[in-house]
Image (tube, rainbow, N blue to C red):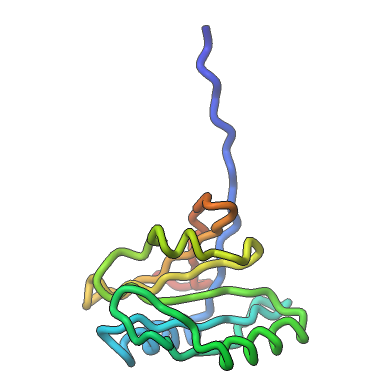
Amino acid sequence: MNAATPSLHTVPAFALDRATWDALVEHAWSDFPYEVCGLLGIRPDGSCVHFPIDNAERSMTYYVMDAKQLLRAMREIEDAGWGLAIYHSHTHTQAYPSATDIRLAAYPEATYLIVTLQDRDHPDIRGFSIIDGVVTEKPVVVPDEVV
């Protein structure tokens, strides 16, 4: 009996320009040790529009986006027809979705980005697709740079 060969699922990388990478890391440090959050609008050319959003809970372990800021940003992103990335920080843990992150992932078309400050000297950003509770990593790349 032959074991079934698992199918290979290729997920495209998520390209993030250096300025946006730096802005997300800077935002994560700006309210340390609390989690920060926000959205990115992804233009057709791949460039990003950054929407930092206040964490209404100001918590070290979870985030709740300020409802008014979230609505304004989502409206602008939808009206422009841009793609969506949702980000938040993990200040003391790895950049991987928590059980709460997975449970609350309501936008299957979005890329979920997590900025980790766990290694204070080497912040990192990882990207994920979360669909029906299934997490798939989307490599984050900064074109022509090593991060």
